[in-house]
Amino acid sequence: MAKPNTLNSKPKITDYDFIIKIIQFLESKFGISFFITTMDFDVLYLWWEKRIPFKIIEESISNVINRWNLRKRKIYSFSNFSYEVRKNYKGFLELNVSVERNEDKKEEYDKIEKFFNNYPEELIRLKKEFEDIHEKFKNKGNIDIDNIKEKLLNLFKHNKELDLRTEIFLKNLSPELRKPEIEKKYRINYLLNKFKIPDFDI
Image (cartoon, rainbow, N blue to C red; front, side, top):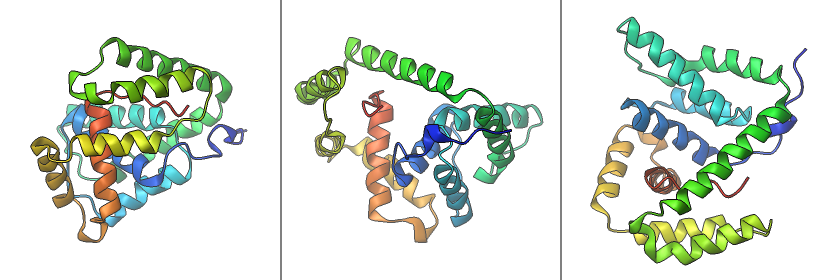
């Protein structure tokens, strides 16, 4: 019998952050992008509502793409991953989720150390802020993640690469999904992904 998903009873990230993170994973890892319809958005939103860990989604997407590549089939929608995500999530719930959580924490700690050991030159102006966040993180203090994200956006306010990526992303969205908050989330998540900025909110 499946255990209740107490691990993810509280959402770790917002719905738009979660959705855009998945879209960017598909694009950065596999170079796959397609026109995102409201149906695609609903699929991703459902995954967020169910609090499905990103690791499960990442593995499921990878599995499906590897199988489809062998059959020379083209991914055209996030619904292509629905069955695999549902199956793997069910298996996840039947495991001891506390063990999974400890592994996830260790992985995030490793990412934080790696980030500071290879600190990006482009983010030098924010190094003090990141060091302050790291210190608070180690001491289990309150961390203002939103503040550093705003500073990150301002730092790349007139960045041509980011502007171009964002323009392409918006063109691939159904018109009703082209909202300012989604554009902003895309910009933030693109920068977080590009510079491998870890998640301090764990």
